[in-house]
Image (cartoon, rainbow, N blue to C red; front, side):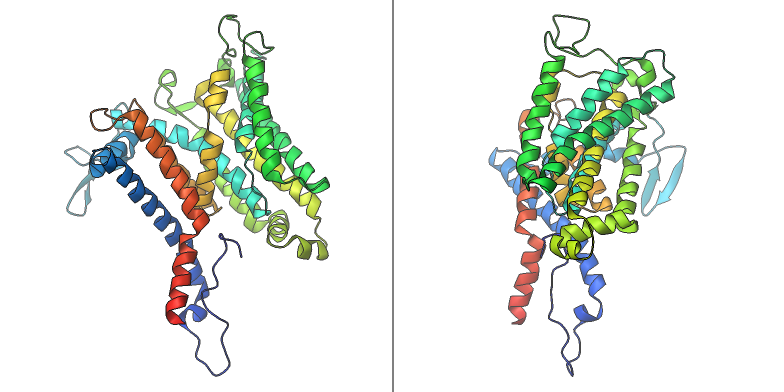
Length: 412
């Protein structure tokens, strides 16, 4: 049984033998496991990360506190004297309307980074529901950025709302087509999606590097700089919090949240979602039941790629506004989304919170937010990578399943 399905904690009830509490209330235990396992995974990963910090001679508690401060999440829970106090337990909590504060700016950056992670996490999660491991979120993201910046820097006279919508839709379609290639290969010749999506990642990266590199067909007006043109103002998403020139937060965050809802509806409330889950659980049984396995392989990968392509388009229209070979080659958002999907157990809520966690880590460990006297930001960035890797490792080990196995051994 998959690591992401409920573990069989107990045997079936036997006639004449009273059922155990787990057999009486299986949904309660399954639901608890869906929350407890990611929490255990996260805590253990942070504990190991803290051990790494301690080995460098720094105080892990102080370092983690500094990272937390850099995320800006504390903006929501500031305590102090303010005219708009609200009683909160033993102290006072006030809603900090000062959007120009350092904490507010940090939180804006956290949510900016979280937005594409949410969507690339959904790209992994939806494919996994169909029994496929989509490693190609990075390439699909790049495909979305290429089309978004190309269309966004063209058609300057187009109506702004139509223009930005065109960029977003084109980015999502580009990601869908790019992922659909792997789906077609899987459906027709049985090519494993892990191999094909990895190869498609590199293809997208180097195609993008060529397009925007020196002498490339999409290079910007400055010949000596390998970069694209800036997208026009009409192709930019509205910024509702902060200043556009200082990477304020655009409405892209609401699009990402809406996609979490769309994902949940697709998976749990549509015939398409039922067919996708049936194929993922048992392709042969699904085929016997009249479900086209090949069709669902393609559709699932295309929808997954659409999520990742939309992530790239939102980054371009929301705050980056241009792209270059160095940006394309350095970006790792698709792989971070992979870790978020695994930690979130491929659920909408889980992927959302896991994405926020990784977005906060990336922001809190950046050189702009982390005080170098507490911990070197370059080392802290590696600490983030270590925690991401540990999450993937521990999810693979299935700590929740290990805990259930040890319980069963004690009962035996």
